[in-house]
Image 1 (tube, helix red, strand yellow):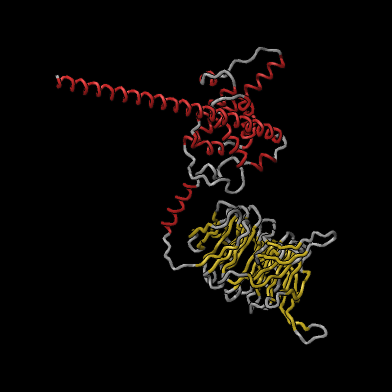
Image 2: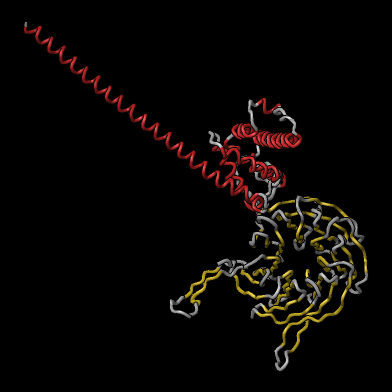
Length: 552
C-alpha cells in the first residue's frame, strides 16, 4: 500500500459477503514529512514530530517505542524535565501535553489562534515560552492539577503573561541567565525583551529576509541568527552589535549551539549540516546527508550527537568521533567536491528535472559546452530563418537566402542543418549536451525532431536517443506544457515507426551480409577441396611416372 503497509484480506466469492482484514504488517516510521525533533535529557531517546503523529525512538536500537497521533501537523517539540512528558505545538495553535509512558495526550490547550511555531523551556525548568503566528509570545508555568473525581495528579500548564507584537513570531528563545527574551519576527528583525517585565531592550537589524531560527550561547553573551537571506549573523547581547556576518550557498532552516561552547550547527535547503566556530568566525566542517531540504535538527545535551530530518523523509543521526580534524585538509576536500559538482546534471544547468536528475559520471567538459552552444545556435538560426520565410510568404516576397552558416555546412534545408549538428556531437557527450540546453530550447528542439523522423536516414539513432533521453529526464516539466502533448504523441508514433523500420533495415542488411559471408565461405571451401584433390592427383601421377621409369 502507499503508506508502507502490507495487508492480507479474506475475500469470499458469495454475494454480499464483506472483505475481512486478517493480518497487517506495518513499519513504525512516519507516514509523512518529519518537521521537528528533540533529544531526551539523558540522550537515550529521540522524539520526532510529523504531519500526523509524535514518535519516540530508541537512539541505540533505532526502534520506535511510542506513537501518539495528533490532529494537526507538529511544528515544535519540547522535552520536559524528567523525560516523562513532552510538549508539542501544532499547526492549528494547540499545545499538547503528552505522557510518554502511557503514550496518551493528557491535555490539549488552545495556546494560540494560529500556528504554534516555537516552544522553549525556561532555564529554571519551571515553565516555558511559546510563540505563534498570532503575533504573541506567551509565558507558561508548569503545575500539577488533580483530576476531578480522582486523587491522581497530572501535569498541566498555567498561562501567566502574554507579549503582543506587531508581526508574526518565527521563533523565540530565553537566555540561559533567564534575563532576556529574544523573538524573531516576520519583518526580518529580532527583538530583545527583559524577561521579568517584557519591556523592550534592543532590536537586531540587518537581515533582508525573515529569521528562521536563532539561539543564545550558554554564557548569554552571544546570539546567533539564521535567515532565509542565506546569511548567519553573530550578535553581542550586551549592546546588540553585529560581530560578524557569514554567508552560505542556500537558505538556512535552523541553527543550534553546541552546549557549553561557542560552536554551532546550521542546516540549509541544500541538505547540508555545517559546523561553525563563533569565536573565530570560521566554518569547521560540512556534513552532507539529506537529499533535498534539511528542515530541522537537534543537538544532544552532551554535544556528542546530532539528529536531523529533511525533505527525503529520513531521520539521520550523527555521532562525534575522536578523529583529529585538519581544516586545511577539509578545505582541500571541499574544493575537490566543488570541482566534481561541475557536471552536466549539477545545479548550474538551465534545465530543471528535479533533484539529482541523473548521476552521470562524466564532467561538463569544454567540448560538451561547445557542442551545446553549437546546437543552441542551430536552433536559433532555424527559428529566425523560418520566421523570415513565413513573413516573406505573407508579403508575397521571394524566399530569403539561406543563412551563411548553413551554406558553410553545405546543407540546403533546415532539417539537414539540424541533423548535421546532431551528427557532429560525440556519442559519449550527447546526454550532457542535452542537459545544458534551457527548457524553452528543449521544447523547440523536440518539435524540430518531427520532420527528421518523417524521413529515413542514417542519423536516426542519435535522433531517437536524444528524444528518449529528454522524455525520460524531463518528463514532468514537458508534460506540464499543454502544447507539448500533441507533439509528444506524434513523436511517439514516428519514433516507434522509424525505429522499427531502421531495425528491420539493419536486420535485413545483417542477414544479407551473413548470407554473403556463408556463400563466400562455401565457395572458398569448394575451391580449397578442389585444389587439394588436384594436388593429390598430381602427386599420384608423378609417383606413378617415377615407378614406371625405375622399372624400365
